[in-house]
Image 1 (tube, rainbow, N blue to C red):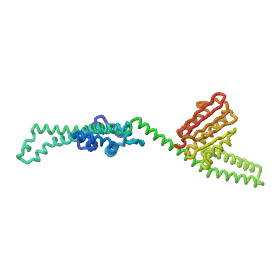
Image 2: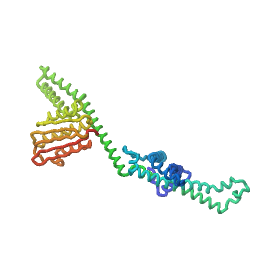
Image 3: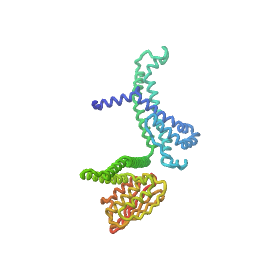
Length: 410
């Protein structure tokens, strides 16, 4: 392991990185100077009063272009990406009254000019420091007999001037670094999204990533369903057919061997039935082939109690939402059969206003509690996976009504 740097070593390393001959200070100077160049129109307006109002109007109308240029400066010279806030379709005048536009105007009219003054001071410091530190070189270049040429190299004034130049060259790199850091923080705060906009953007990103995860999980279930249907189920079916054929055709085998064949045949048929239920639980083929209406009709037909079905599904529902609706109805009917002691169930599925509303009502004993481990918690989580909601109304004595609302499109 490398040795842990001591405070002295860290200080020496930081000082070396701020040396006038290193690349860091010159890169910082280039960074702040590029920002100062974008404030030239405003300083021209300040220095020439006649141009004040026209140039101010030009700056306000060019906020988007100036902000894009500053973001490019940050990205190219600083490696910092400042996200751009969209106007959301608003007109120019309405957008100028928005908080984002006010922050941009404050940056270009106040912050950027002040930062440009700091950049000018840094450039001036570099120039003055270089001139003062090389005063002996300037005197050496002058011809003998010139008033600037000096024969005595130990003149106190020249020594002090040289020392002052060296001190200035040692201080300017730190000033350039501090100014570059301040420029970056101010530009991030005033040209980037504020805290509320960052949270909104984060919520949008999380919603997109969640939708992608849900779609990927649904696609994976479809793949597993196809593999099981076309692979394992076909092999088990072939095995069951061969065992059934052997059971019917082999007559001269010992009874013990025949019993083994019979048991194997029955086990293969039971395995096929369990595998079909598993495949249906992963992703029902009828949902993909014939749609949600037919799939829900199949659930109602297989339910252990009468189900009155009323389905009016609008077109254009996302496949993932259809899968969530299918499994929600299936789990809800399973919960009714296990816990409600009901004699019938009313199932209604309707689409309105971009939402799919599922209502399951039974005439059971009621008293269903989502926190009581009756499966309602799983239904709520399944609905929430696609930004849906679930409500339960179940007074003691019944009836119990479960209402699920899902978005038609993710």
